[in-house]
Amino acid sequence: MHEVTPLSANWYHLSRYDFDLRLADGSWQRQTREAYDRGNGATILLYNRARRSVVLTRQFRLPAFLNGITSGQMIEAPAGLLDDDSPGDAIRREVAEETGYRIGDVEPVFDIFMSPGSVTERLHFFMAEYNPSDRPTNGGGADGENENIEVLEIGFERALAMVASGEIRDAKTILLLYHVRLRGIL
Ligand SMILES: Nc1nc2c(ncn2[C@@H]2O[C@H](COP(=O)(O)OP(=O)(O)O[C@H]3O[C@H](CO)[C@@H](O)[C@H](O)[C@@H]3O)[C@@H](O)[C@H]2O)c(=O)[nH]1
Ligand SMILES: [Mg+2]
Image (cartoon, rainbow, N blue to C red; front, side, top):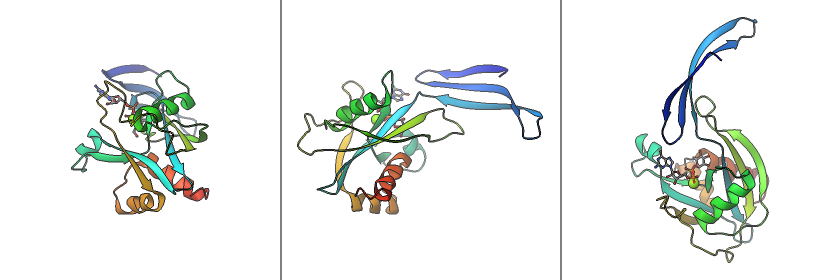
């Protein structure tokens, strides 16, 4: 690494990296790339076998609005940044803040890069069964964060149809829905 140049350190960190990459033939190539570091995150699919349903959220996402989604509204699995928590603790916190449900054990699925060409984040995926009656609050997002999150309980088949129709366009959400189908859970 030759040089790291901070380009923006406002909410998260965007930096330019000047570095040498060793190629397959053993030679070195100088490269310049920008990378956006917003920490790591966690996401979860809450499902209920008896109801054959899942819990998703709907919220305004500026990047979606900027790129062709007129309403800016995105339907997504609950998710959040880890901050200083472990992935398991972080996802339990996010589920409570965003959806209001209290959940027991969560099952890890994988932790993967969502945009490895530009974003450093590793996103930890989980699944858990939710109990419709174990919901101490209505969720909606953390107080003071202006999240304005709407909580949706949707039939699993309907959620898959929404992927096909383009009503669900969020990668983490689609991965989780397909994973649950692949595993034969719903
Ligand atoms: N003021 C301000 N607030 C911001 C900014 N960027 C994010 N926030 C606020 O920071 C909070 C982040 O909420 P989380 O629930 O922790 O994260 P998230 O945005 O839902 O991110 C999740 O989804 C992403 C997209 O799929 C994932 O990339 C990420 O890992 C995580 O799972 C929200 O209240 C959001 O409004 C910013 O530039 N300025
Ligand atoms: Mg969130």
